[in-house]
Length: 289
Image (tube, rainbow, N blue to C red):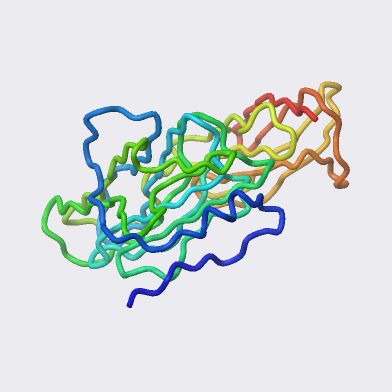
């Protein structure tokens, strides 16, 4: 018997309507993922397609288009465990403030069950973009040229690959398009870096913006090194600093609207300035309380 899905920990502040969404039983039938939808629907779940080599660490993006605000995501995904070792599922900018975004350990080999839960301050607003990344280690073994490894949505239990809106209403598979992804393996080459490493330094626009609690932004670094991000008010006074060392890749930083001493700052326009090496970038954001 297949073990039942298990959620690790749910914050006390999680709204009741989101907790109720977990109370679903197993389904009686297994559906087939939709590879090529013929009629466009208002919502979409999409997996990226990339190329890789044996021994490489790769990241497959999960993107979502949602027509209404979303506070809960449930996804069940399949991959080929003969060639891929799943490492982790990490959140992207659109859900960076969610208290829960993790993978359930109680799954079959070759399957990943991802659970994402927002709180009242981090509901994902309507839009389109990346919500997470599936991180794999490609096994270091010889493979035929252009080996194609699909990564798809699996429908095994009630609630698989669904969303809940901010009122707790189910957004089910009848109004969601599913686009599967893939990893195509080259026959030679062993890499030791993440696929699609940023080509240059880039500071992303914060999301959400305007915001009233937390906001997050990405910092893309083409190589490992130190970085600093300073937040200024309109008077030019520095109110908060983020500093550290980071590997090559995309980092997500979250600001909770407080100053360096942990005190809430006032509503208004703020600027955040990122520096790493000789690269500098400045963006604007708006805090509304």
